[in-house]
Image (cartoon, rainbow, N blue to C red; front, side, top):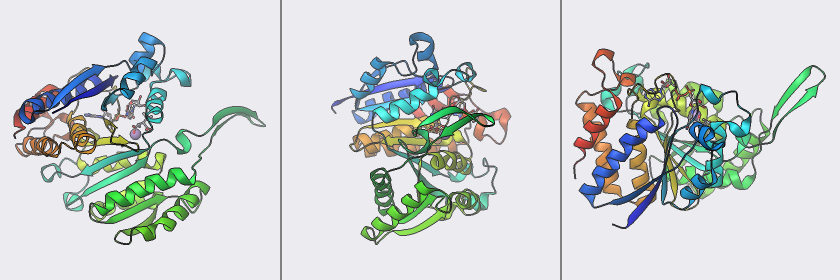
Length: 358
Ligand code: NAD
Ligand code: IPM
Ligand code: MN
């Protein structure tokens, strides 16, 4: 196959640890499926602040723009938490998403049968859960104007939430289209009983819904959705929602699968270019110990193969390898019931690499 350029921005904390395992997996599929990748690494996040004085150096962004797909680890850590906005790792993450036009964040939460006992929820509640959260990624309160001012009672802080119709429409259409390819059920999540942006969201959903008559649509208020996700997770198919609601609901959905260390994601724009990253963060509490679960990042590679490159066979091979390794009883600490038998990051990566078959 044609050589694909992969921009790697591993970031901070466990980012580099899990990304290394994902690259091993990609190398294995090169041999097996005749694929070819060229990896370029760029400084990003806290480490870029330390070495270059900015979380998203221009050369890193240029490298991403010149690539066919981006593989991202995670950014952030206590060292940079009190920095001013432009010197925070998270600002670099929002910047890369915005600069690359990645407005659609796809976060699948699939419960592996053998992991039902790894979740804090009852196994019978989890049975058959296979949902996707589609999170709007470049708008809303994350990107609205923010400022401080002196008020009558001292300092005030203001975050504004803005959405225009075009931004809502493109992400909602994505929701309908993904639902059409799955079980044809779409839950649109908002807070239309309170927020003006949510009222515009719901109006927009209702206006375009007739174009997708085969999709069964439900509107769910975000607080109720947070509850229903734990009460009846398997009844959800595709959930489409705005930026911050999607951030919160996807971490909640992660616990259905047993751990946030299982949740992969794809961030897409108009074309097939995409950025692939685990949903979890840099996990400062376990960084450097070699115990992080690499599966979220490895499953993100499967999403990359499917959504950016159309390497369906290799994507499925990765997912099957993960399933087989889990079925054989191998667990990192976050998904182990018996923590004394847990294996580390590289051991899990090695097992998955060995399990990939053509
Ligand atoms: P986190 O996702 O990093 O960690 C939450 C908990 O989950 C921790 O106990 C952690 O040990 C555990 N965990 C996360 N990933 C794991 C894995 N692969 N294997 C095993 N356990 C795992 O969230 P947090 O603690 O709220 O945030 C830590 C830092 O990460 C913050 O600076 C935050 O801003 C940043 N963050 C970055 C991203 C990203 O880069 N995409 C996402 C979320 C948070
Ligand atoms: C995520 C993270 C980021 C977000 C933070 C680190 C800015 O939580 O990717 O889910 O809120 O989008
Ligand atoms: Mn998050």
